[in-house]
Length: 316
Image (cartoon, rainbow, N blue to C red; front, side, top):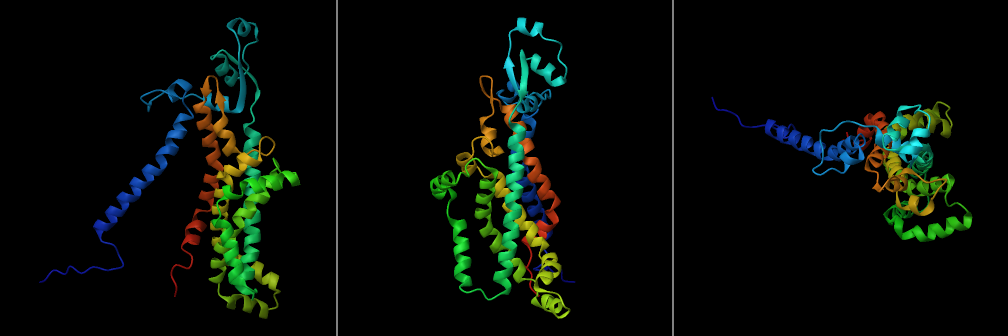
C-alpha cells in the first residue's frame, strides 16, 4: 500500500505546532522576565538591589515597601536611644537603618489619582465612543467618511506636538494640576480610537435585530440598550482595555500638566529618591503595585478581549 503524505491545509502539522509552541514559550519568558525581576527587586534591600553581579538568591525584605509608603529621617544613635520602643514592624525596620518614620509618603494620593483619572477617562471615552460609533454605523451622517478620517487623524498626531498649546490653554482655563482636566485630555485622545474600534464592532451586528425590536414596539433608545449593547459587549470590553492602558501609562502630559494635586503614578515613580541616590527597591515596589489594577482589569476582561480582537474575522 502506498503511504499518503497529504495533510490538511487548515490544520498545522505536528512539527509546526511544536515550533509555534516553542516560539510562544520563548516570547512569554522574554516578555515576563522584566516584570519578574521588578517584583523580585521590590523585596530586596538597597545593597542587594545594586549588587553586581545581580543576586538571584537573597533574603526577602519589605524595606522597599516601607520606604515607598513612608517618609523617613536619619537620627543619631544617641537620639534613637531616647525614643520609645518601636510600635510596629515598619518602625523597627526603619530603626535598624538608624532612621525614624516621620509620616506617610505621597504614594497613596498619587495612586488614587491614577485610578480616578485612568478609569474616569476610560469610562467617558467608551461611553461617548459607543454613541458616536452607533450614529456613524446606523444613520446617514453628512460627510461621514471625512468626519471619520478627521477623528482618526487626531490619533495619528504625536501628543508631544501639541503639548505646549495644550499647556497654555489649560493654564488659561485653570485646568492645570486638576483631575478633571486630565480626564478631559485623556478622553479627547482616546475617543478617536474608541469610535473607530466600536464602529467596526457595531457594523458586524445585523441590522435586522434592531428592526425586529422596533417592530415589537421598542424605541430607538430601547433597541440600542437592549439589543445593540449586549451584542457589542466584546468590542466595548476590548476598547476599554486599550483606552485604559493609554491613560494608565501616559507620561508626557502627566509630567507637563501636573505637579502636585493631580499627579499620577508614571511621573511620580521615577522621582522616588532614597538616601544617597535612587531607592530602587521602593521604585520596584511602586511599579509592582502600579501594575496590579491594569493586570486585574485585563484578566477580568480577557475572554471579551480575545473575542473582541477576533470579532468579525470569520464571515459566513
